[in-house]
Length: 373
Image 1 (cartoon, rainbow, N blue to C red):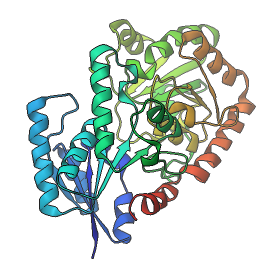
Image 2 (image 1 turned 30 degrees about the vertical axis):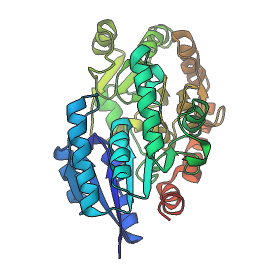
Image 3 (image 1 turned 90 degrees about the vertical axis):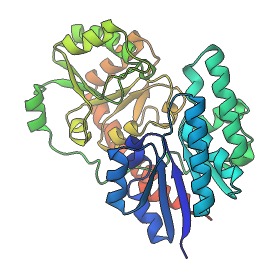
């Protein structure tokens, strides 16, 4: 008889990244997965692809007491009716509601996947409130999986949960990476189409928001373009209203001829191929999967020592760290520009490191042995 797992998230967009082919792996090992998530075409598409059940429940990112109580009741009813063996909650709101509902329903195995410390860049009453909700989620969970060592350390030092509840899969992440998909290939056609032929291309993939250090990156770029005449900055990802960039930063991104803004895309692989260096100057992460993707594509990495980011490279072997200020960022970009042999070495080291530690099958085995037994 198959054992039943309920996975709870609030944004259907993340489903391929959090689970993907893990669904088939678990099916092969006699587990049946159901997804509870805010409704939308991404949820339908994902569930149809893997032949699993998806339950649409509005789980909002923001705090809305009435909507949250309604979602809690729906989750509780679903859990009681289906008698799940495991309930696994992702993202702060999805985890909070699912852990509460599962505890009330008497589920023995309640697992919180901590994808980051969301309140790290918050202040005042909002920060205090988020800390309290984080602690409540941790109390209701029987086990807590942190996606990186630094997230786990921060949580324990901040007394969010006792160390005995804490787990980390190998060196981190919740799902690992399909290293065969992220493989370097010839990029001449794309570079030509984007006007990047013969250029030194620094790339970024992700949301364009303040927390990602985009403002500082754009300030640094004004220093780079005056020093490196053939430099181009390739930005792949959407602007967002939440944590929105200031108008002058958006204007620079859209109007500067040395910046190529792509926006949101369905497949990032070809864009990594067009880059020479990858940068993530973030203030906080859980575990930045984009860094693993870029490393798997044999790109040297520039990132920060912020939570999550600090775990994503091996310093001076797969990448280098930068402070989150324009001068430091520019200095590290120039380091890689002036040292092409080191760029190549760090890129090659990065792919090997990802294969050895973050291949999705390595992480899936950890899921089986550490939380589903």
